[in-house]
Length: 212
Image (cartoon, rainbow, N blue to C red; front, side):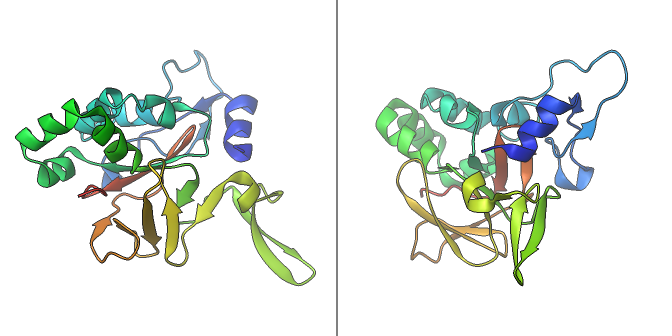
């Protein structure tokens, strides 16, 4: 359920702005558009956001997603989160020969790519449109102050949180903005920047891959 995001996109003309320079590219958040002409070619999906990254850090990942025929997994209506290794992260994990061999093995490639995709909105900080609601002395976060996080398919990482990926592998997201590659492992990838919002989901930028 994309309550807040759908409301913004359908109820207002929305201009997605470039992330602050400290976050090094991409899109984040939304502001209402009130002038003319209307903005064109706004990002609609996670793929659009990665493609428009000002530093072109995700070209290898995008190529792998396409080769694995996994584009639909990150271009649907969500909820969805892509843990997105940069070009440098993939280069660190695979030699050119290993990467080429991976591309030739569609089954292995699909597992690798889908091990970075979770069918939940996974964030490390509470979005502005998630509001604390108190009822009968109990306070819980709700999307727009109305819809439970569970019903919205959202997870805010406040403790070590096990996640199941599209490849049916298990990872653990931690509040220190790290992701353990396999549940029970101590090998971690680090998220920087975190919580990059796309119109259909979230991107968590990784300094390593989650499958090697």
